[in-house]
Length: 443
Image (cartoon, rainbow, N blue to C red; front, side, top):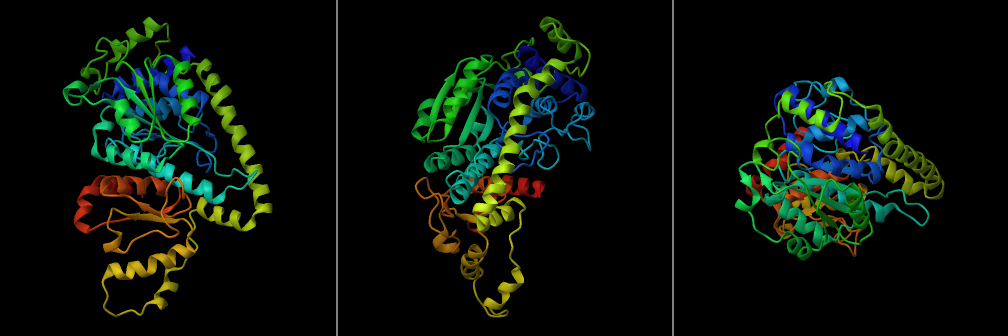
């Protein structure tokens, strides 16, 4: 275990040193957190990274990409060591911040802080709705969790507060937020900018809060994650870590976004008794991941495929509908709708949308969304009533006055193959520019 964690750390540091750019602080501090998550909880098959029923992991603290890439390589994803050596280089599979569709195992493009949290909430909404829509007794065809790792900076962003508030209100019980809490940000200690009681804040929003006092205690981290999976509400785990742990600048903002340098990295390797060769991959670490993470995912993927075949026989119509969602097939020819409303007559666009959206929703079960407290003006609502903890089959989301989070949440729902939408007045799209930009990047 310890050798694997060290291998994660040192691969990350070598990548950052090689690029002469990156964020070593989170690599050293949060490596045990990702080790615990991937080894003992997250279920995904690295050989089939697009498997629909996999657990999803969002790195909201996208600057920690070197940490994620190191884990993905050791965990068996198709991310060659040569690509780690090309970290932050144009055309590589290892860009400075994770990019969706670019690197196997990366669920979303992140970097602007708080966006990953919002997308994770959207992903959890999609999972909850689909689980209740498709599952039948003995057929848990939708059965997975949404995990997100965020930092202190993420939680200071307005989009994060908006998204966290809505997720708590909706009671998204399979959303597990892991907070890498090191009390440091780029300009210094977080106490210079915030002084809130995080536990009271999260509990007041409807979260199951836990505190792990030492990120290096893998067992305690794992127990906390397991406890989070057992509750019927979203979970928030604050894990205290030391940014840049072990380095000469540990616990300071100086180690946040500046390479340690080859000499300091070598010193750390020698102190840990680790091979000093650059980009060394220890066979023990590879076997460690294969034994737990790899085998768990392989078995789960095989089991799910067998279940899906039985589901096809028992519920052929539902199976066909699920297959359409998995394959992103909306099954509608938009041209067929033209006949429903003559071309050339004068009508406010929002009225036209208000007429067509319910018709489209009848034909596209994956169509789901809502308005930022403006449905009465924009005429944009989802079908089948409101989505809530009590009514998860509803396809109308009351986003409230949360335009920024609405954009991020819609992105997260879309990543989970729903045809998601959000609505507001055009002028308020200024609040949504970051998620709109990320949506364009993710195509």
